[in-house]
Image (cartoon, rainbow, N blue to C red; front, side, top):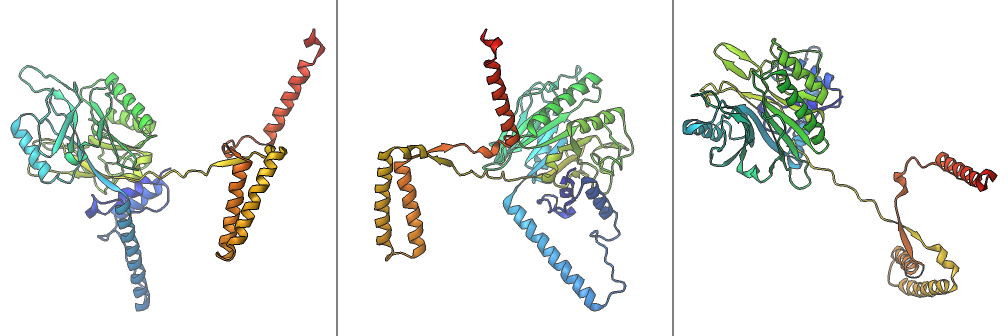
Amino acid sequence: MTEGFSNLQADKDSESGPPRASEAGSTAQTLERRDSANTAGSEDGRVCLTEGKDDFDLLLDEARESVKLRELDFLRVLSATRAQNLHLGFWNVAGIQGRPKVEQLQKALDGPLNHLDIIGVSETWLLSAAPRIPGYQVILRPGSATPGAVGGHPKGGVGFIIKDKWNSRVQVLPDTKYPGSMWIRIHGGKRRSPLFVCVVYSRPDGDAAEQRTLFNDLKGRCLQYTLRGAVFIGGDFNARIGKTTDNERVGSFGEETKNPRGGKLLKFLEEADLYCLNNRNGRTEYTYRRGESTSVIDYCLATSASLRLAGRLKVHTFEDGGIGSDHNLISLAVRIEDVPRRTRKPKMFKWKTSRLDKPEVVSAYAEELKCTLDDFLNSLNERSPDESLNMFIEWVRKAAIKTIGRRRVKDATKICWWDEEVKLAVENRNQTQAMYAEAPSRKK
């Protein structure tokens, strides 16, 4: 169905680098190869079978492995020179109100999160003004946060934290009906396809109608934006989808628990042709922790056409407390690829041969050809035979353009259905219409 999941098999130590070149195969086969690699006994996922081999065979295997690794290194360098990586993150920050919380966020952005270019944040608890963070631009969706109870903090709120170097390439897209989501378009640059990113916060106390509005909005935007570029959706869905081994849209290393909201999310993945990038690293990586309770409720989703651009999803745990949020940040590297250049078809012309019926045109053409022939004979001593022949052909063409003329015609190869059968049907129709017009009943 798709070969994009092979890009999720990048080395654990190179999460921020470009995805490794993948082998052809179905998604299910790729996931099976990846699962077996994650559970292998050796550290690097390769099993070395040396039993029954002599020294020469071992040296030969080592040489082959060296050549293979060099080829992979070359492909990595080639990929890095032809593509640009965007480091994307999603985080439920549990409020960024007040100077202490903003200072903690600034410290995290300058430290362990410095490699991230754009972070979609949820539960900002901000009603209007966005905080100022040096080196970053914070944009919020107005009205996404609602006032809380008396004496309590506001609820909800979504937005993006964008590095200054990417700020000029980000465009905020029109709001959807669901207030807990926000879309942006990231311009890839010259001859690069754009990237569409959405951050989501689904309230845990939202009813079925609210969930339906969210998924309908996301589905409509996915269908609209997939035709123009890669699409990624992330945030806090407050849903537990569990794990499965027979559904390639979900990772096979998730948690055991599944709730009704998770079932609705799984149905949405099928309807919108989305894949969940979580739980594919050989172990369960929890995104939410409160006391002894842990769960996976923060996800990153990608369309099937965007999978080949996605790197391995990483879950960041903050043992030192981070900014006081009970959610872990999730991030991945997204490759912004070059858009293939369109090859222009040569213009097609047709000679105006009907003008050769006029004697004055024939005389003018003959006179031009005579001058051309004289110039051709004089150039034989100065140029090689091939150069003289090419020049003669060009002179004849210019003479025909000057005297006979030509007109531009459209490329008829695009009309693939216009064949002999259709021509015969049209001819029969015209004959039938002519017979009908000449019928006696029509003349009366």
